[in-house]
Image 1 (tube, rainbow, N blue to C red):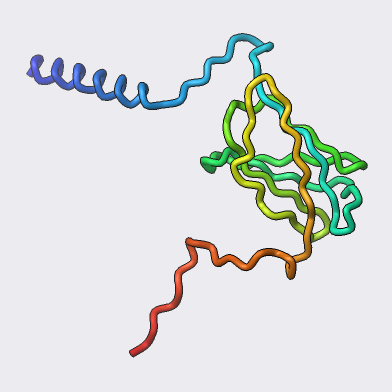
Image 2 (cartoon, rainbow, N blue to C red):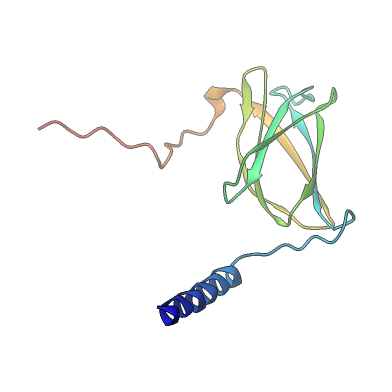
Length: 138
């Protein structure tokens, strides 16, 4: 019995180490740890700044979306980002921008972006891959 428990503990440790080795590990060292920044402007359909727009962003891997707000001049800044690719989208008064996919952020750098709001009729027509078609009746 003790031998079986010992074997299980060894296997668990080995599997845990293997799983950990495949992960991207980010080590922060203190408050001054390097991080990336996204700085940008939200423009309305008329190419003028969109005041107080809402910017939704998340890691391109789909981890927990976050929201920030633009200022009165349509400017926004997102700080303390890990090196990764991010998806961003802006909205204001019921108008949305397209998703900007895989926007690259590097630690220690500021990445600039412009998000343009467009009316729904201008949005590209793409069927989401997760939408299924109804089965045909025979």
